Length: 611
Ligand code: ADP
Ligand code: MG
Ligand code: ZN
Image 1: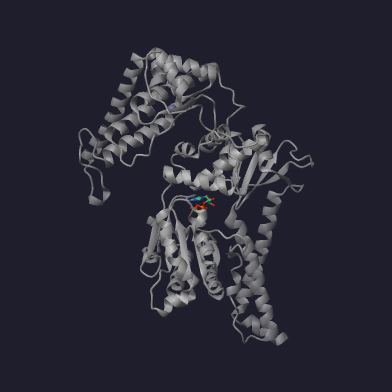
Image 2: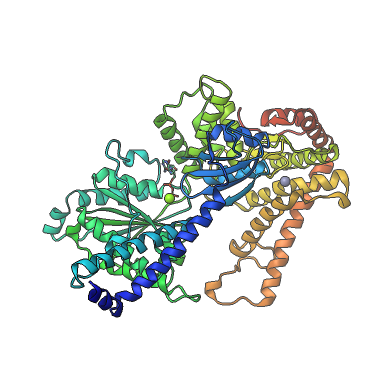
């Protein structure tokens, strides 16, 4: 025995032993410190999400820490669960994180995120340490003849193949192109041998590219569900930022595991964090090595293994080109935010899946039109929020008013009840929003006004919502100019009513938006006055500095012309503008139809959304 120990110390495993002991000490200290910070004297009380929302509205929540996955920890100065503790825990299952953040910030609670990878890597360090130590123990007893098995280090590859109700393509609405590509490989996953015998080449990797919440994870899971195979979910960050060799080892282990399971779908989320361009500055050597290992594995498995790797990213431009080569992720599918019809389909699908009792006044198709630019996850969040509201108001079914409130919450945040707004400020906001409403009604005839309100919500003091009749794919110069005028309506109304000295910061995001449109028109669409058809294209060589300043001058001219148009409109129809502002001060929120009738009574005709 003693001789064996001496031999061990001389051997190359000695380094491992010391390293592992040091790591375990660090890991234990790390875990302790973190635990101490997150868990004060009492164990946290578990609080339901709806109770948490109520506490937020009452201003009882001081701070929250969002944990990876589906929970948050919070601290309140009130005893929420009557259990003598001020720290609490909430399961936030399917609720989108930004919604939670918006709700918390609206209620002035501090928001932080628990550092997930650090936490997890501490656990991984610990696990690896234990495994290595155990390995060395084994070597001591059974002699040094056998090789240490490194593959057991990858512990958190999840086998997400739900036995009772697997996710299938029926759970996905829209995303047609991506689904078509995935459908093609279902047969292959079911019977890889048949394809191999025929000498058929099948894809190894499919890259799904698109914004967050568009259903990439969902579709990968559905692919496994359709084919009845295993689903191995991982994500880039799981592999990166590890200490030397772990990323590589985990990639190996993942593929080995899939092969042993007889194939399946390997899903790698956020692959850009791992598969970024190799050899970048800044010491990503370890990630590069992990990426190389992934390439080796991709090249290494054959048709009979029955493995498909699906990777997701929202930044395809950052990927290492080696990943996109033939025989690797040679199919890439772009997933866009859903169109209005797709939004409608997603809403109906989720309402049906949840067996949501919908009142007669709910039109999902109209709701879809009111949610431009949102993802499937946002839409799911909207339905969830509406359902919670319905429960809290004691309703028997979810009705339009719940949907409307939920929508405002998802898009803007919660109504801010505690905010005190001075009479002057309120009047200014009323004029500002009336300005948007009037400018929109006149200059953007195809986007009727849905509603206008001066109820503070989220970060906004008020808002004018427009409801496009249909989604345009091409934008005419007139419609772009209309958008700019509508956006400048708020500032113009402030200036007209209160004078140039009293214009406010309230227009800051409006100006951001309008400047962006104007720049787009000049720099990319060839709609500038003096630069005309010449656009800015970095690929076609440098642009002279003279041209640059002329383009900037064009942008400015576009904005100024639009602003003058709006001011002129308001001067001609000042009584109508003021009347709408007064109505807002009086009623806080007006529907598009109500706003129109106020304006019509003062001689300004316009269209509104059909109510
Ligand atoms: P991603 O991986 O693209 O960020 P997810 O797959 O995680 O998006 O989507 C989150 C949730 O949003 C899904 O679980 C699903 O409930 C819903 N969702 C998103 N897109 C769709 C869609 N096209 N059809 C149905 N549900 C969707
Ligand atoms: Mg995802
Ligand atoms: Zn504004």
